[in-house]
Every structure is written in C-alpha cells, then in structure tokens.
Length: 606
Image (cartoon, rainbow, N blue to C red):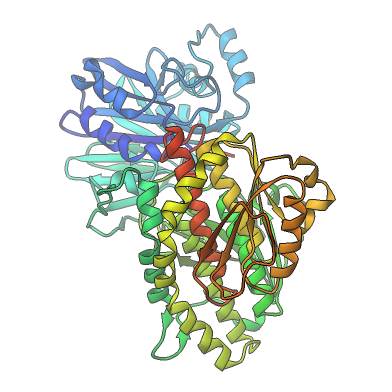
C-alpha cells in the first residue's frame, strides 16, 4: 500500500519527487523519504509522518541530483518511524518498495552471515543488501534477475545504484508499477495518477517484468532477463484537477458529490430515449452465463453483497459472493458458465487482483467494476464496467461505494432483460425511477443538523451496532465499517434477525443501536427485532423512509427519515445518513478524517 516515484532527468528532481509523493499519499502516510544520486554518493532524507514533514526538511529542500527515487509508507514490517522509512540503502544501492517480502527473515540471516549490517526492522532493507551481494559476482541485469528470483512475496521496486548514476531499475511482482515518458526525462510510479502531472504517455509493467529507465529511453525485460517490447499508452492529456474547494475534508466533498456522480453513472449507462441499458461489447452470449460470483474486499465486498440481493430478486441466476482474501485460498471449482465479477475502487486491491489472476489462470469469464480504468484489475479482466465517479481521495470510500452499487444494480437489470426475466413495462418503470435517484439523494443529504447532534452519543459509547434485514443488511455492514474506520469506535453490523442468536447479549443500557427499517417487505419483521433491542435498554436510532404511517413502536431514541422510492433504490438513500454519522463522529473527536490511522486508500499488499 506504499507509493513509489522515480525520476531520471537532466535537471534536479527532488522537488518534483516530493510533489509527486503528495499525490501518492493516499497509498500510505506513516513516513516518507527520498534518495538522489549526486557527486558519486547516495543522498538520503527520511521523515516520520506526512510528506509535508519531508518537504519542510531543509536538507530535502536543497538536495542536488538529476536522478532519484521517493516513497510514502504504509507500515508492514517495523514501526512507522524515520529509521524504517524508505528508501533503504546499502553502501552502493538504494531501494523503495511497495509490498511484502515473505522470506525476509531467512534472507537477512544469510546476509548477516556475509557481513552485511542492517539498520532497520523492515523487510525492504534485505533487497538493497541482496542486490549488493549479487553485484559482487554479477552484472546489473543478472544481479537484478538473481535478486528477484530470491524474493518470495509481492513487490514493486524502484532501485538506484551509486556506481551507475545514469539509470533507475523498476521491477514488479503482484504490486502495480508504471513507467512514464517525457522530454529528456523518464519516470517510474505506482500509478498513472502520480505521473499524469508530468506525462500522459504510460507503460505498465506486467508481473515478473523489470525495466531499466535511462533519461532518453527505457529497456524492458522479462522475468528471465530477455529484452521485450512494451506498448506505450496515451492517456487523457488533461490532468484531473481535484481539490477540497470550500469543504474542510475531501470526504465531506465526496459525500456531497454523490448526486452528481450517480447522475454521471446513470447518464453513462441508461438510454432513456430507447428505454435500454447501454452495455456495449459484452464479450459473451447471454446463454453462456448461468451463474455469477461477486468478489471484493471491505466496502467493495459490501457492494457485492448488495448486488447479490438485486440479482436474486431480478433474475434466476445462481449468485455467490466471496471475500477476495479468502477466495484464492479455497478449493474453487471453476465453471465455464460462471461470470466472476471483481469489484474494487482503485483497481489495484492486492487480494482482489490475486483472485482475478487465479481466475485468469483457469480461463474463466472475468468482469471488473472499478473506478480507475487504467488499473491492473481493469487491464487484466475480460470486460470492464467503470463506475465514473472521478477521483476519490478520502480513504473511507463514499461516492465510490454508491457508484459500485449503481453499476451492479444496472447490470442486474440488464441481465433480467437479456434473460426475459422481467417484463418490459416493469423494466421501463425501474429505469424511470432510477433517473429520479440523484434528486432523491440531494434531498436526503439535508440531514446534517440531526446527524451532528446524534454523533456525540456514539462518541461517548464503548460500542455500537447497526442492524438491517434484506436490502438493508449490506448497508448496516457498511455503516458500521465507516464508523470504525473514521471514529475508531467499535461497531458491528448484523442481520437484525440474528440478534436473538447471540449478539443480543452485548446490548446494555444506553448502547446506541442503528436500526435500518425502510418500509419495504422486511419492515414489520425489522421493527419486531428493534423492539427486542429497545427492551434491553438500547438507544435506538431508527433510519427509515418518509411515510404517512407512523412507526409501529415506542421508546425510539431518535428517528431520521430519508426520501421514499422503490425498495430496490432505498439502500442508496439509507447510506447517506450513515456516511454523515461516521464523518461527524470523527470530526467531533478531531481525528484526521481523510487519512484515518493504520489505513490506506489503495490496498496493494496481501
């Protein structure tokens, strides 16, 4: 989950590297560092905490050198301090690394036996010393080949050499890495987002490949060391500008943007003039798919769970969901008539990508639902459905979650139409109702004042629960996750009907419990479950939709009503107050909302 940048130029690179690290900070913000080559030396500066700490360092401000590497860290091995910050250097090699070296302990023991001295607790430092050891008997290319074969685990690497001050080596296995091309300079980066301020010409390394980046050319090599040719992709030349504007945090802005991003997604896929859904170039015949498996992690997994309810309601397809980190380790029985759908905001989620890679190796049908169309998951899937949300900076996903469930709902509708499992008049009605969703979201966003007063009670509690049934259950899980991510409050999401099977024991006097009970087919059952919780002394926050009917219950602590629509679309509206609850809880505690502790936006390690 770390971020890497490398630049080989004809002018000093330190300032540009630091500016690029700011764009990569969503990948990690435990520490940051930079190394340049100048006057036959490796010059290295590292700092604990954010990139701004590195930027303020007077040595970093005055660093010379036209070739350099930089890094933002999300700690895996060793405490998040300046000693463990990257780059890690031996006497003549400096390395930045994203990933995990699983056999680092064994390699370190071997290298200590060879006389190497280690300064940090990291697995990365092993790489610098191993290359140094291999350079005693091998040339550059062979030493890189030999080193990469010795490493078990995942990595994206940027490497510079004191005795070879004219190039940077990049290497990839499991973690993303891109090369960029500019006039009299070339670049290495974790993704195109960090490189687009410098170039729109990009090449992506595939697993096992490495490259040698010189100022005016780049050479690519296969895992075996054979020189290979790579395509240069030309991305949109307009860099996407994205700032907080008048908002205090990116997350606040991204919550408020959701009517716009949902409208963008609807306009991209819904053709109201022809009353149809535009999913072009679908690569398989509809009769070739009889089942679906949805795969994701965290918030994306909740999107998958939400989609399962829709697919099962609208079609007769068999639908399964899987947590990506579990999928690859189970004994999977791959089926040729199954469509495997991979959901990821960044498109670089390591567990999800590994599950996709397993599916590719078994030659099954794969589809990606992603926000970043240049990402590894998008590039390696048979078919891609972008969510069209634009850049999302806040680590806790908001607009991307609604974007994911929107596209999955649209896909479920399209399958129902393809398979003739929905009548055309019902299909047309659902499209019309979908077009009203952005306006309904706008109105639902006006719950700020109520949520702000409620947040204090959650902050004072030692834990909370989020309950829902049917379509509301995945939203309960997502609401609990958001509160955990941002406010560091213990929160659990449960199916409301499961409370009596154990979790009810956790309810005590004054415990805040969110009950999602929209007026859908599960409403009466959910209200009954809510009464069980109230009877044990819980303070219930009921979130339902507007109706002329009164709620059939007494002793509700607080109630929030969202707009009304058909039950398929209510989950979109129920999500909004839960996002705002997490936001205001964290705001009142004074926490860093966009960059919560221990987390990163793009989860590129297993």
